[in-house]
Length: 308
Image (cartoon, rainbow, N blue to C red; front, top):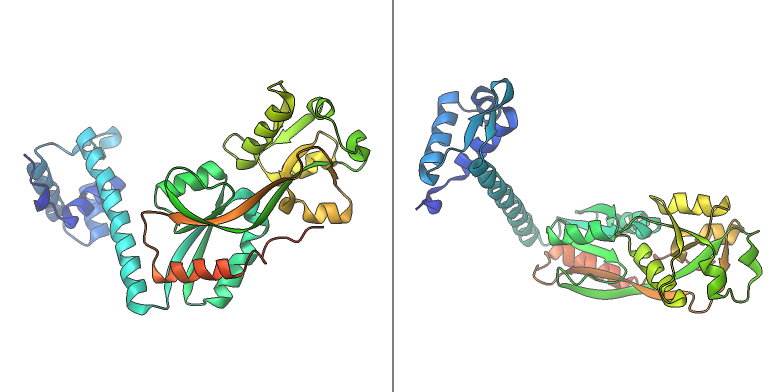
Protein backbone atom coordinates (compact mmCIF):
# COMPACT_ATOMS: atom_id res chain seq x y z
CA UNK A 1 0.00 0.00 0.00
CA UNK A 2 1.22 3.51 -0.82
CA UNK A 3 2.69 5.39 2.13
CA UNK A 4 0.65 8.53 1.71
CA UNK A 5 1.97 9.94 4.98
CA UNK A 6 5.48 9.94 3.49
CA UNK A 7 4.58 12.28 0.63
CA UNK A 8 6.08 15.76 0.77
CA UNK A 9 5.02 19.09 -0.61
CA UNK A 10 8.35 19.32 -2.43
CA UNK A 11 7.57 16.13 -4.33
CA UNK A 12 4.13 17.39 -5.29
CA UNK A 13 5.48 20.78 -6.35
CA UNK A 14 8.13 19.06 -8.45
CA UNK A 15 5.45 17.05 -10.25
CA UNK A 16 3.34 20.17 -10.80
CA UNK A 17 6.35 22.08 -12.16
CA UNK A 18 7.35 19.34 -14.60
CA UNK A 19 3.81 19.09 -15.99
CA UNK A 20 3.51 22.88 -16.19
CA UNK A 21 6.83 23.36 -18.02
CA UNK A 22 7.09 20.05 -19.87
CA UNK A 23 10.75 19.39 -19.00
CA UNK A 24 12.91 18.61 -15.99
CA UNK A 25 15.27 21.44 -16.87
CA UNK A 26 12.56 24.10 -17.00
CA UNK A 27 10.95 22.77 -13.82
CA UNK A 28 14.31 22.86 -12.06
CA UNK A 29 14.81 26.46 -13.17
CA UNK A 30 11.40 27.49 -11.86
CA UNK A 31 11.96 25.83 -8.48
CA UNK A 32 15.60 26.86 -8.11
CA UNK A 33 16.82 23.25 -8.07
CA UNK A 34 18.92 21.05 -10.32
CA UNK A 35 17.37 18.69 -12.89
CA UNK A 36 18.72 15.63 -11.00
CA UNK A 37 17.06 16.93 -7.84
CA UNK A 38 13.73 17.26 -9.66
CA UNK A 39 14.16 13.78 -11.14
CA UNK A 40 14.86 12.41 -7.67
CA UNK A 41 11.73 14.01 -6.22
CA UNK A 42 9.57 12.54 -9.00
CA UNK A 43 11.19 9.10 -8.69
CA UNK A 44 10.65 9.08 -4.92
CA UNK A 45 7.02 10.05 -5.39
CA UNK A 46 6.49 7.29 -7.96
CA UNK A 47 8.16 4.75 -5.66
CA UNK A 48 5.91 5.77 -2.77
CA UNK A 49 2.76 5.46 -4.87
CA UNK A 50 3.89 2.45 -6.87
CA UNK A 51 2.84 3.97 -10.19
CA UNK A 52 4.45 5.99 -13.00
CA UNK A 53 3.23 9.56 -12.86
CA UNK A 54 4.77 11.01 -16.03
CA UNK A 55 5.06 9.97 -19.64
CA UNK A 56 6.44 11.52 -22.78
CA UNK A 57 3.84 13.27 -24.91
CA UNK A 58 4.00 15.17 -28.18
CA UNK A 59 7.26 16.95 -28.94
CA UNK A 60 8.93 15.02 -26.15
CA UNK A 61 7.40 17.01 -23.29
CA UNK A 62 6.29 15.32 -20.08
CA UNK A 63 2.56 14.86 -19.53
CA UNK A 64 0.83 13.16 -16.59
CA UNK A 65 -0.33 9.58 -16.67
CA UNK A 66 -3.82 8.86 -15.36
CA UNK A 67 -2.24 8.24 -11.96
CA UNK A 68 -0.24 11.44 -12.27
CA UNK A 69 -3.37 13.42 -13.07
CA UNK A 70 -5.02 12.05 -9.92
CA UNK A 71 -2.03 13.21 -7.88
CA UNK A 72 -2.14 16.65 -9.52
CA UNK A 73 -5.82 17.02 -8.68
CA UNK A 74 -5.06 16.15 -5.06
CA UNK A 75 -2.13 18.59 -5.08
CA UNK A 76 -4.46 21.36 -6.29
CA UNK A 77 -6.85 20.67 -3.43
CA UNK A 78 -3.96 20.67 -0.97
CA UNK A 79 -2.78 24.01 -2.36
CA UNK A 80 -6.27 25.46 -1.92
CA UNK A 81 -6.47 24.11 1.63
CA UNK A 82 -3.04 25.48 2.53
CA UNK A 83 -3.88 28.85 1.00
CA UNK A 84 -7.08 28.96 3.03
CA UNK A 85 -5.12 27.99 6.13
CA UNK A 86 -2.59 30.75 5.57
CA UNK A 87 -5.35 33.31 5.08
CA UNK A 88 -7.15 32.25 8.25
CA UNK A 89 -3.95 32.29 10.31
CA UNK A 90 -3.06 35.76 9.05
CA UNK A 91 -6.52 37.10 9.86
CA UNK A 92 -6.48 35.51 13.31
CA UNK A 93 -3.03 36.89 14.01
CA UNK A 94 -3.82 40.48 13.07
CA UNK A 95 -7.50 40.68 13.89
CA UNK A 96 -7.73 43.76 11.66
CA UNK A 97 -6.43 42.82 8.23
CA UNK A 98 -7.22 40.00 5.89
CA UNK A 99 -9.03 39.30 2.67
CA UNK A 100 -12.40 38.08 1.50
CA UNK A 101 -13.96 37.13 -1.80
CA UNK A 102 -17.53 38.35 -2.28
CA UNK A 103 -19.64 36.68 -4.97
CA UNK A 104 -22.70 38.50 -6.33
CA UNK A 105 -25.21 37.26 -8.90
CA UNK A 106 -25.34 39.15 -12.18
CA UNK A 107 -28.43 41.16 -11.27
CA UNK A 108 -26.51 42.61 -8.34
CA UNK A 109 -23.84 44.17 -10.53
CA UNK A 110 -25.81 47.42 -10.44
CA UNK A 111 -25.09 47.89 -6.74
CA UNK A 112 -22.19 45.51 -6.00
CA UNK A 113 -19.33 47.81 -7.13
CA UNK A 114 -20.65 50.63 -4.95
CA UNK A 115 -20.95 48.26 -2.01
CA UNK A 116 -17.38 47.02 -2.45
CA UNK A 117 -16.13 50.61 -2.68
CA UNK A 118 -17.93 51.35 0.59
CA UNK A 119 -16.38 48.28 2.24
CA UNK A 120 -12.90 49.28 1.12
CA UNK A 121 -13.35 52.77 2.55
CA UNK A 122 -14.68 51.38 5.82
CA UNK A 123 -12.06 48.59 6.07
CA UNK A 124 -8.96 49.77 4.18
CA UNK A 125 -6.83 46.93 5.55
CA UNK A 126 -9.18 44.21 4.33
CA UNK A 127 -8.80 43.22 0.69
CA UNK A 128 -12.24 42.67 -0.83
CA UNK A 129 -12.41 40.85 -4.16
CA UNK A 130 -15.65 40.93 -6.15
CA UNK A 131 -16.80 38.02 -8.30
CA UNK A 132 -19.94 38.38 -10.45
CA UNK A 133 -21.73 35.54 -12.25
CA UNK A 134 -25.15 34.03 -12.78
CA UNK A 135 -26.82 31.99 -10.07
CA UNK A 136 -25.31 28.68 -11.20
CA UNK A 137 -21.82 30.21 -11.34
CA UNK A 138 -22.04 31.70 -7.85
CA UNK A 139 -23.49 28.49 -6.42
CA UNK A 140 -20.70 26.46 -8.04
CA UNK A 141 -18.14 28.84 -6.54
CA UNK A 142 -19.69 28.32 -3.12
CA UNK A 143 -19.49 24.58 -3.66
CA UNK A 144 -15.82 24.92 -4.58
CA UNK A 145 -15.16 27.08 -1.50
CA UNK A 146 -13.98 29.84 -3.81
CA UNK A 147 -16.14 32.47 -2.08
CA UNK A 148 -16.20 33.73 1.49
CA UNK A 149 -19.52 35.54 1.16
CA UNK A 150 -22.23 35.68 -1.48
CA UNK A 151 -25.17 37.94 -2.23
CA UNK A 152 -28.05 36.47 -4.21
CA UNK A 153 -31.78 36.00 -4.22
CA UNK A 154 -33.13 32.60 -3.22
CA UNK A 155 -30.38 30.79 -1.24
CA UNK A 156 -29.21 27.50 -2.76
CA UNK A 157 -30.03 24.15 -1.21
CA UNK A 158 -26.55 22.86 -1.91
CA UNK A 159 -24.17 23.64 -0.39
CA UNK A 160 -25.94 24.27 2.93
CA UNK A 161 -25.61 27.95 3.77
CA UNK A 162 -26.39 30.44 6.51
CA UNK A 163 -28.46 33.16 4.84
CA UNK A 164 -29.78 36.45 6.19
CA UNK A 165 -32.01 38.92 4.31
CA UNK A 166 -30.55 42.25 3.23
CA UNK A 167 -33.51 44.00 1.65
CA UNK A 168 -36.35 43.78 -0.88
CA UNK A 169 -35.74 42.58 -4.42
CA UNK A 170 -38.83 43.23 -6.60
CA UNK A 171 -39.18 41.85 -10.12
CA UNK A 172 -41.36 43.52 -12.75
CA UNK A 173 -42.39 43.21 -16.39
CA UNK A 174 -40.83 45.88 -18.59
CA UNK A 175 -41.72 47.12 -22.06
CA UNK A 176 -41.02 50.02 -24.37
CA UNK A 177 -43.14 53.13 -23.59
CA UNK A 178 -45.12 52.72 -26.85
CA UNK A 179 -45.86 49.02 -26.30
CA UNK A 180 -49.57 48.06 -26.69
CA UNK A 181 -49.64 46.76 -23.10
CA UNK A 182 -48.29 50.02 -21.70
CA UNK A 183 -51.82 51.14 -20.85
CA UNK A 184 -53.08 47.79 -19.58
CA UNK A 185 -54.65 47.80 -16.13
CA UNK A 186 -53.76 45.05 -15.62
CA UNK A 187 -52.45 42.95 -18.51
CA UNK A 188 -54.29 39.65 -18.80
CA UNK A 189 -52.48 36.26 -18.87
CA UNK A 190 -53.49 35.58 -22.49
CA UNK A 191 -52.10 38.97 -23.53
CA UNK A 192 -48.80 38.26 -21.81
CA UNK A 193 -48.49 34.75 -23.25
CA UNK A 194 -48.89 36.19 -26.75
CA UNK A 195 -45.76 38.29 -26.27
CA UNK A 196 -42.13 37.44 -26.95
CA UNK A 197 -40.11 37.31 -23.74
CA UNK A 198 -36.47 38.33 -23.63
CA UNK A 199 -34.58 36.37 -21.00
CA UNK A 200 -31.19 35.50 -19.62
CA UNK A 201 -29.48 32.15 -20.16
CA UNK A 202 -30.50 28.89 -18.48
CA UNK A 203 -29.11 28.89 -14.94
CA UNK A 204 -29.99 32.52 -14.32
CA UNK A 205 -32.17 33.08 -11.26
CA UNK A 206 -34.29 35.60 -13.17
CA UNK A 207 -34.83 33.08 -15.99
CA UNK A 208 -36.03 30.52 -13.46
CA UNK A 209 -38.43 33.07 -11.94
CA UNK A 210 -39.79 34.09 -15.36
CA UNK A 211 -40.42 30.47 -16.35
CA UNK A 212 -42.28 29.75 -13.11
CA UNK A 213 -44.37 32.91 -13.44
CA UNK A 214 -45.43 32.15 -17.02
CA UNK A 215 -46.09 28.49 -16.23
CA UNK A 216 -48.31 29.61 -13.38
CA UNK A 217 -50.40 32.16 -15.30
CA UNK A 218 -50.56 30.01 -18.43
CA UNK A 219 -51.09 26.60 -16.82
CA UNK A 220 -48.06 25.28 -18.66
CA UNK A 221 -48.84 26.78 -22.07
CA UNK A 222 -45.80 27.35 -24.29
CA UNK A 223 -44.39 30.85 -24.67
CA UNK A 224 -41.81 32.46 -26.93
CA UNK A 225 -38.39 33.24 -25.50
CA UNK A 226 -35.37 34.94 -27.03
CA UNK A 227 -32.28 34.26 -24.96
CA UNK A 228 -29.79 37.05 -24.35
CA UNK A 229 -26.53 37.08 -22.47
CA UNK A 230 -26.80 40.14 -20.24
CA UNK A 231 -29.38 42.34 -18.57
CA UNK A 232 -28.00 45.30 -20.52
CA UNK A 233 -28.72 43.54 -23.81
CA UNK A 234 -32.21 42.68 -22.62
CA UNK A 235 -32.91 46.30 -21.67
CA UNK A 236 -31.75 47.63 -25.03
CA UNK A 237 -33.76 44.97 -26.87
CA UNK A 238 -36.91 45.86 -24.92
CA UNK A 239 -36.37 49.56 -25.65
CA UNK A 240 -36.02 48.65 -29.35
CA UNK A 241 -39.36 46.81 -29.25
CA UNK A 242 -38.12 43.23 -29.68
CA UNK A 243 -40.20 41.98 -26.78
CA UNK A 244 -40.90 42.33 -23.08
CA UNK A 245 -38.99 41.00 -20.09
CA UNK A 246 -39.42 39.97 -16.49
CA UNK A 247 -36.46 41.54 -14.77
CA UNK A 248 -35.18 42.78 -11.43
CA UNK A 249 -36.43 46.30 -10.81
CA UNK A 250 -32.97 47.11 -9.50
CA UNK A 251 -31.55 46.70 -13.01
CA UNK A 252 -33.89 49.24 -14.63
CA UNK A 253 -34.25 51.98 -12.01
CA UNK A 254 -32.72 54.68 -14.20
CA UNK A 255 -34.56 53.62 -17.37
CA UNK A 256 -37.91 53.72 -15.53
CA UNK A 257 -37.08 57.11 -14.03
CA UNK A 258 -36.08 58.55 -17.40
CA UNK A 259 -39.11 57.09 -19.21
CA UNK A 260 -37.12 54.85 -21.53
CA UNK A 261 -38.96 51.81 -20.15
CA UNK A 262 -42.32 51.28 -18.47
CA UNK A 263 -43.55 48.66 -16.03
CA UNK A 264 -46.47 46.53 -17.23
CA UNK A 265 -49.04 46.00 -14.45
CA UNK A 266 -50.22 42.42 -14.18
CA UNK A 267 -51.81 40.18 -11.60
CA UNK A 268 -49.11 38.64 -9.42
CA UNK A 269 -46.64 41.43 -10.13
CA UNK A 270 -44.34 42.71 -8.91
CA UNK A 271 -42.85 39.46 -7.65
CA UNK A 272 -41.44 40.33 -4.27
CA UNK A 273 -38.22 38.58 -3.31
CA UNK A 274 -35.35 39.44 -1.00
CA UNK A 275 -31.63 39.82 -1.36
CA UNK A 276 -29.62 37.58 0.98
CA UNK A 277 -26.08 37.58 2.22
CA UNK A 278 -24.83 34.08 2.87
CA UNK A 279 -21.87 31.87 3.59
CA UNK A 280 -21.29 28.16 3.77
CA UNK A 281 -22.74 26.55 6.87
CA UNK A 282 -19.65 24.37 7.33
CA UNK A 283 -17.15 27.21 6.89
CA UNK A 284 -16.08 29.31 9.84
CA UNK A 285 -15.75 32.94 8.81
CA UNK A 286 -12.40 34.60 9.37
CA UNK A 287 -12.44 37.73 11.55
CA UNK A 288 -12.05 39.85 8.41
CA UNK A 289 -14.97 38.13 6.67
CA UNK A 290 -17.11 38.35 9.79
CA UNK A 291 -16.50 42.10 10.03
CA UNK A 292 -17.56 42.57 6.42
CA UNK A 293 -20.59 40.34 6.88
CA UNK A 294 -21.80 42.17 9.97
CA UNK A 295 -21.21 45.59 8.43
CA UNK A 296 -23.17 44.69 5.29
CA UNK A 297 -26.05 43.53 7.49
CA UNK A 298 -25.91 46.77 9.48
CA UNK A 299 -26.52 48.76 6.29
CA UNK A 300 -30.05 47.27 6.13
CA UNK A 301 -30.10 47.37 2.35
CA UNK A 302 -29.33 51.09 2.12
CA UNK A 303 -26.94 50.33 -0.77
CA UNK A 304 -29.76 48.88 -2.90
CA UNK A 305 -31.17 51.05 -5.72
CA UNK A 306 -34.07 53.27 -4.69
CA UNK A 307 -37.40 52.72 -6.48
CA UNK A 308 -38.08 55.17 -9.32
